[in-house]
Amino acid sequence: MNENENSYVLALKLTPGIGDVLAKQLISYCGSASAIFSEKKGALLKIPNIGEKTIKALTSGSFIKQAEAIIQDCEKQKIEIVPYFHADFPERLKSVNDAPLLIYTKGKSSFPGTKMIGIVGTRNATNYGKQITEKIVEELVSHNAVVVSGLAYGIDIAAHRCALKHDLPTVAVLAGGLDKIYPSVHKKSALEMLDNDGGWISEYPPGTKPDPHNFPSRNRIIAGMTEALIVVEAANKGGALITANIAYSYNREVFAVPGDLQNKYSEGCNALIRAQKANIFTGIKDLEYLLGWEKGESNPAKPVVDLSTYGESERKIISVLEEFKTGLHLDELSWKTQINVHEAVSHLLTLEFAGLVKSLPGKRYMRV
Image (cartoon, rainbow, N blue to C red):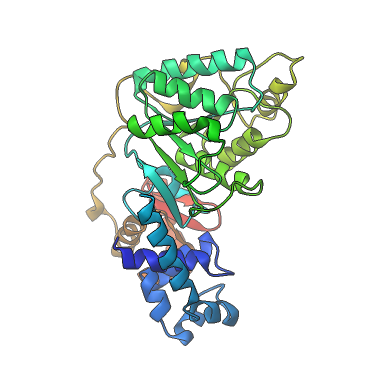
């Protein structure tokens, strides 16, 4: 992705009234971010959820200049800007409907074919919680897994440091700009991550403070990046439970470590298990069983499928979905394939039964 295209993607992100989902829809319809800004008004008005006010903001030109200034700032600070369709965008996060339009990164951000586990918990970690975190990470070594967390006090930083201790890559997802590590006392560990094939990720540009409202958004990235999330300790309210609920909504495997019934920092984990939103975690075998893991092996390769056995319309649908890795809304898919919606639904059902297509929330579909 060239720098000029990045400026248009970033300009979309800055435009009022255009969120991550709508921005990706616009790119899908127009073919690229730059094409959106040169598209005729009449054509833009035909795209669902686009109105006069949004088009006026797009054509103002001011957001392109803001985007270019942010890009220059990132270059000075050696921060990469990675759009959602770039090869370096986290693989699993692409399948999430509300994934960020772009992320800012330092170090490594994508680990294709690698086992990735999120580990989160309370900031007020007990000795028990820290010991369990150590045990979990130690057992992940045989799977060469990547540990993802939020660099916060307590369980998060314990998970990162245990990963570094056992020479596993670890990724910190931050709620502010990458120009300033928060909390600052964890900066040493954060720098060690970059030296150990790990990285930092944020959806916020340099200069953004880690305000409270940013943390729930940050948590969805942790949940989206990983194939499973383990909650070690959590009170009845807090960021760890938010992350667990998001992971559950993304159809990720969620695990919770059971704890002392008299300890308030076990209440959240016990509640997740009771509500059947989390599997009970007693050791690595629970993870291996539910994820189908085998030691020392990467995720299995996809079997080769003979598409010649499918009709022209079904092959056309597969071809388009392979191009748009994050999936497409049914209306967009119909528009791009020139197959009417009712026929497309029928073909998609056939492909879903065959295990070639997966339906996502909000009438979206993606290639498996």
